Image (cartoon, rainbow, N blue to C red; front, side, top):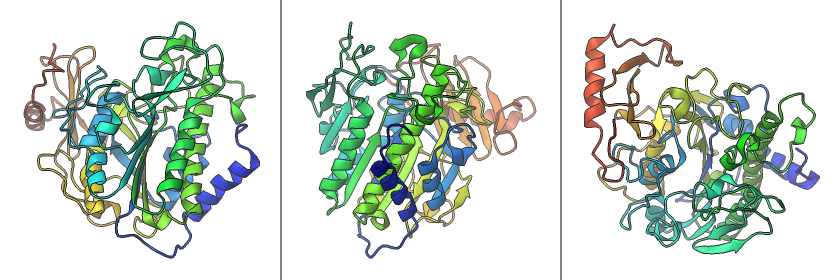
Length: 458
């Protein structure tokens, strides 16, 4: 890519190579690095079949660990998905079930808070979306020792904002945004400092500062999300790199470059861990907050971003919620493994808590995946549940091979799919399997509690 100098490129490649090398020690409490892409589809990475966009560092991470083909996001849009990841609850029980500005509660049990109490340094760098300045939901009030990035989702659309946040303090940037919205959203007319580059640098600095103690690093860049305020030119990226001369629409070259830049960030982070000889001590999990988008002029079909799956962002079909899931930890997680066992982001809290030697609270929807991740037998997973409140009330539940979907209304008929034989959800079997349809319909009702902030409409 054009934005990598020779030293940076060599450092990233060295990090990928180091994933397979031996290291001299292991801590009793591993470092935990969670990398969450923004609107990256199941089919956007080379290791998941992407043919047009190069993702060498993520492909190397997959080769060094396990690639899961049935990893699920907490939701089909960003804020509830992040809430599920941080609280261990699915959207039938979580506080945040949509992109409305609902903050986490003061007494919320979050993953960074649990790990902070277990002695970890905790840092989140990138997009937050779970609490505005002054609210109970800001990162510093939810267990994050360090935070740098975007608090608000619309602010996070803009790749060249006038400011970012360090906890609740504005950090001014030299960009100019005419007609800037009160929440920071808009389109820059003077582009000097690309926010995601700054965020990546801050995440690397956190590793440097905390390398001598256990740490939890959550890196949440906003790539390849679009700037929705920029209309059909919303795939903002500093340069198109290797895609600049391809005969594609500009927006598709930009999106490819955005994915490539995300891949570069991962390479830089792995290289920094390798530089500090931390790879044997560090669990790395990479995923995405939901499926690919059709925003800012992007066409998910051009890159086949959802692969063989049906649907995109804002759908509860597989393409909206099934996302990349890479897990690597040298000497612990089997290398080169591909696994179809399903798990969801709400499993991360109990899994990370167990690795840190602390207790997760009762009443979670997630379970400890430790035995699965190290190559052991899969745990028995409770049914997976999602609900979505935009454009009517939609629900989905997966239990074993079967998935039920009800779209836009509680009164709508329930669709039934066999995900083992029909992952594309092309054949509705509800009429042919009435008993299974009835059982999953009951689950759709019992898997949730009503929410005052997200009442059921329709």
